[in-house]
Length: 503
Image (cartoon, rainbow, N blue to C red; front, side, top):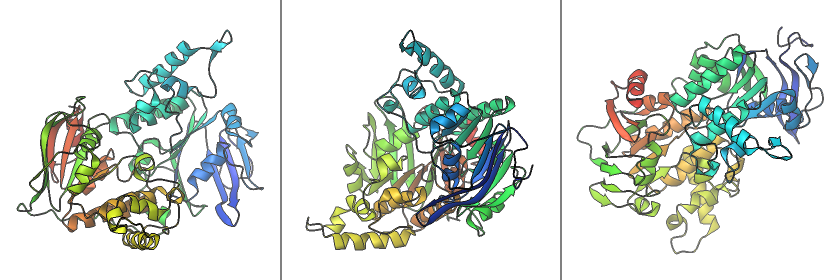
């Protein structure tokens, strides 16, 4: 059946002429989509292309414009709520996690559909079933744990476990691996392949093109709310997909960054650093001015914990840190900031920006000494300060716009902008492109390259191995809180890094 057929010829999902307009803003226009039983269809496009809107229409979160027609399992389909879609067997895992932090994992997995026995909530059965799904995904944590105590990667796996308990026949996965390392991603893909063999269908939204080739059967590309390309298999060269998505050629995703000379001064030195809780132990490394140092490892390796400690967010049990030869004892983030060490956190929405506040306010919060030197804040001065940063980093927004109204890529650029405005010696970027589309990702990589070219020491921590390899002059691999190896740019390959990561 072609995407232009007007009636369903298979018992999967058939979508025709989907449109959605808000006031004068058309976000979807005449989009068609087919997903057959047991098939995984990739839905690609830049942020704002319409992927999330289309997914929300299918999942019953958004009512489409008149003229939209949908069929599911051979019958007319028109959900008016997520409950309608779930009842029909269609579930959506959101890119933005919607877990309740004060509830347990089991309660989150079954929220809205609590299991009952003899008129009471059947908590033991919910815990048992939730624990089984966590085990399938390789998450070694009790289902009775509060979600708020989990790291971002573990919370993402809880979202996936929640979907797997729905017994859905079509799952929409919106950036499901954004917070996962390679090992967790492999486990998820094993489950996807098993469910596909059982006839479960998937719509897979991701910016990680290598994942698309691994897990998907076909590719549909949206741009500016329109269907612009389809591919009958997922083995498509990334440059072609990038051109489909952005409407232009992107010659190379990773910029060329010349390595600093061996004589370049050491910007940051860490010796025998350990955490009170044992999340990292006896870490020793250094990074030079103008160098990009990558940190790789599976989730739980201690990468984020180590960087948070160096930046003064979490405590240090023992060890020694120097910046430019000067001892740093980071009891608070401000201690590190005063010595010109800053960190871009892994969760920009929770830790990087205040979504409800304007861009000029967000950019001013970390730079009051520049926008209010006499301790009196002049909004006009802060707005001008923000305009200069917005222009220099190519942020698509204006100073008075709320941070929450920006795309993920532009939000990330705001977080980077507020810290580089402090002219740091060392910048740590934890998951710098999580949930960011290909076009914005290339722009952020160029920002990183420019920081290194200006002599800044850059540390990149990422669960995206291609990102670490593409940006770094050296790669340090952590496993279970310890350094397992340090690889030069020529030595660092995917296979070698993974060998060390699981050691």
